[in-house]
Image (cartoon, rainbow, N blue to C red; front, side, top):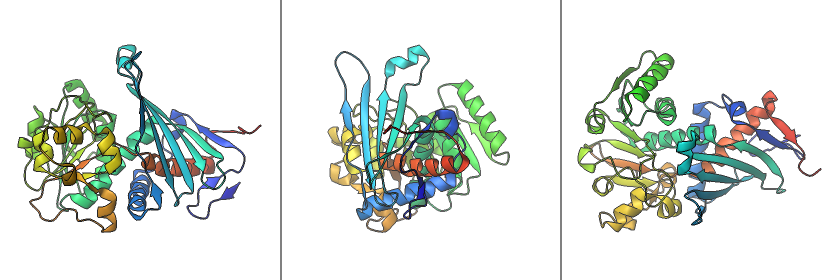
Length: 344
C-alpha cells in the first residue's frame, strides 16, 4: 500500500475497497468535508478539476431516471463516476426515491480504488456545499438559520452551517409536524444550547431567518420570491436534478443574485434555473457565476449587506470525489470495509 503524495490518501495498488452504508457512518467530520468541498470548487475554477454535465438516461418503459455523474481531479489524483437512480415509484415500496453508488478510480493507473454506497456521502457533501456557499455569500453577522424541510438533510445542514456561522436559532417548517418534532428532538440532543422552533408556514421561516436552506424534493415551487428580504442568503438544494422540478418560483430567482455550483450542470439539470429562464424572469447570463470563482476571487460574491444571494445547488460528482477520498483514507486507516482484488 502506498500513500499518494498529493493528498495523503491511502491507495492500494491491487485491491478495491468496498464500503457499505453503515460502514461509512462516522468516518469523516463535517469540518473536513467542508474544507475538501471548498477546495474542489476552487480547483474547478482553476482548471485542475473537470466537472462535465451528467448523462441522463430514461426509457418510456419506466418512470425512473438515471444520472451518470463523472468528475476528475488532480488534487486527489482520482476520477469518479456516481450513478444516481431517481425512482419515484420507490415511495410506494417504502424505499428511498433516490439511490446512488460511486466508483473511485486512480488517475495514474486507472485502477478501481473504491466502490461505496452513496446515501450518506451525498447528504454530507450536499450540506457541506451549502456551508461553503454560506461562508462566501451570507452576511458574517447571520445568526438565524431557516429550513424548509425537516428530514435528514435538514439535520446535516444545521451541522454544516454552524461550522461557518455562529447560528443561535433555527426555524424549521415541514408539511409534516411529526417530522418537525423529530427534527427538533434530534438537533436539540446534539446542540442543547441552540434555540429551535417550528414555523406554521414556509413564509414564516423567511420572515425570521438570515440564511434559508430549501431542502424538499419538490416539483412545484413552494418558495416565493416575495418572501425574500434584503440581506438574506438562500441555499436552494432540495429539488431533484430534473429540469421540470423546482423549489423556488421565477420571481425568487429574479430577485436574488444567483450563484451556481456548476454552470453546465445547472443548465442541464436545474429546474429552478431553467424554468425561470423559460418564464423570461432571468437570462442565462444573469446566472452564470460559479461559487468556485467566488472562492478564488475570479468573481464577486456579496457586494453589500442588502444583497439577496441565492446558491442553486444540483450536486456535483467532484464533491463526491472529494468526500470519497476522505472516506477511503479514513476507512483504510481504521481497517473498515472489504478489500477485493477485482483483477484476480
